[in-house]
Amino acid sequence: MIKKYTIERTFELECGQSLENVDVAYMTLGNMNASCDNVIWVCHALTANADPEEWWPGLVGKQKLIDPEQYFIVCANIIGSCYGSTFAGSLKPGKDKPYGADFPLLTVRDQVRALDALRKHLEIERVKMCIGASLGGQQVVEWAISNPGVFDKICLIATNCRHSPWGIAFNEAQRMAIEADDTLYSGKEEAGWKGMAAARAIAMLSYRNYKTYQYTQMDESEKIDHFKAVSYQQYQGEKLCKRFHPLAYLTLSKMMDAHNVGRGRGGTAAALSLIRAQTLVIGIESDILFPLIEQEYLSRKIPNAFLKVINSKFGHDGFLIEYELLTDIIGEFLSES
View 1 (cartoon, rainbow, N blue to C red):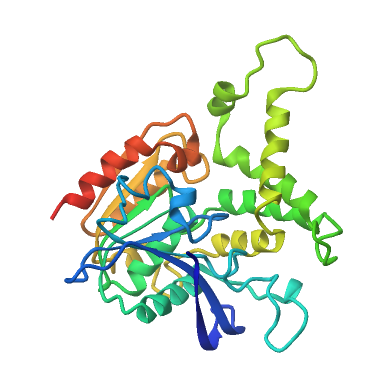
View 2: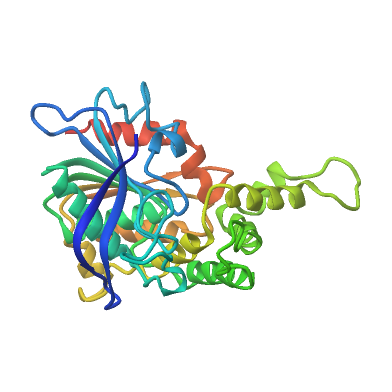
């Protein structure tokens, strides 16, 4: 069941603006044990929500690696997302209209401050393992730097310490598609949907790769139209429109762009050296969005870190698909004393 925690104060943002009474939607699974040492915190990626059993079913759930019968599992919806946390579609405090285009820029560092406020609200002093992939991994690495004494272990999957120009360019192409939809700020129920559908189609090209499409979308016949790849792109766009909000997509893609753990800390290497948690870094060999060079850098610069590489046909999306490989690697890491 989704719960809600409200940060009942002025929440200052890294951009210099602020929000009032920020809502953080979250879910807990299982129970904390007597020694309070069984907490696993899951940080979600771009369009997921606070229910990890829903979007990471191969890793989280009964008789899975992250089992609520063994662990106390916490997952919070990112602020700026549309699954219960404060976002651009939320009503302004004391107003009868949403923030819309006036919603401020959020950073991963802002999100981590919201997560830490929730942690204190839940009276959690130690986290056995914090885990996340993609934008979720960006949160984990930032949190482990800003609060190094909280975590015993962290697991960083298909992520980085600073978003690349390549990743920013992909995100900007998606935002251009959304902002080209002149219904975006119309207030209608389907506002911005066509733009977001196009954005998602662009994103799929970064989540997968050439070999993935050869493997999954190749047509057997000698057709000249109505190709599988065409219907797949359209399907992915339409599917996201049924469950996500274009304004949240804009906010979170910009949050990802602004990710740089070295900002104000003397650079990324200096920042990563502050991490005290035992660290597992997982890279996906075929990932073109967060290429392996980024995970190699993390594993070199974080003290007490090691790297595991998985082979997958599915590129960046491998973190959502390769459950058996991830279970074996993370399970070994989790069981180590």
